[in-house]
Length: 430
Image 1 (cartoon, rainbow, N blue to C red):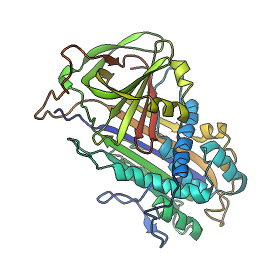
Image 2: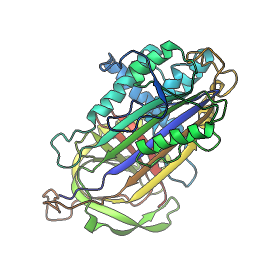
Image 3: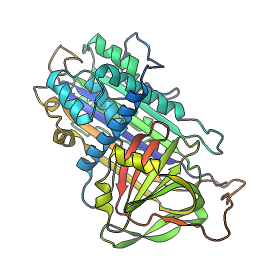
Image 4: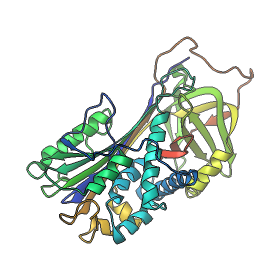
């Protein structure tokens, strides 16, 4: 068996509130570097078995997917690749939403597709985070290294800043975090470097500088951050010795030569109207990458159909088939400010002096001054070779049907049981 180099994905979102900044991140994993600053936390324990109905679970996942598609339409640029994490963004803004009130809360719910009421939304977020992390580290009998998935939340504050106790309670119970105090007003640049340094370590240096220079100011009171990290090895690895240069045809039809991987095995696949889809599972089968390859000339039409319902339809039609699969190596990184995309989706008051974030603190008015998101993804097949180096499932002597990814495609990385979309993106040029 060939052990492929793990696919690595990191994403992080942060928001800065005037006289405060928000960011989302969970309690660090054992052995990880703790966030900088002095920890101040609620005495409440995290709810490890939140009571969430099946209907609320399905609603949260579908809402998050539809939000992801809405953001996708805002952040994609003509002719460019794209990548972001809907889950990371909604986890971060879910924490901010916990402190929003009035019209600010209503606008956030509309823009973020939060259709569950707050008393059910936050337990549902907790359920989803715990469920996803529970799937990590499991091989379910497969050979190879189990996937790594973690999501970290951290709230950073100006030293001595008073936050509502009920807000800290909610963060502790359903978002798994406390508050870390830093002397932001005296040394905003030092605070920025400290937070960025922690983020870099948590994401194995894939997100080295999340918060841009000058984004944290002397009047910043809070920084909420969420870091989401995934690493997984293919369940059916690609064969390094089979990688070779092949043409990739961009949106205009122009061809470029790219290093293209190949493997043979049984994969879930389907043929839709104007596209083909393939699921590539990771070790343990809990996480997988969906690849949707529109037919030539159909990319815009298929991309326009993206939604939770569309992805659900694709999943329902997947059938196992013995295939010869080719996939280009690729790497994509995207950094984007979320302010304009969220304003365009109707979340406007949170970025103004009229913001009502009184659920966080009543000591002074807060507003969101910035919102940053970065994501990174690298896909390849490198690794070491073990006993069954060409461990391809036995099939017909003749070449099996081919699933060739040689033109622009959409991709989703998701957890198969919850169908929660961790990352969403597209590759249109290589």
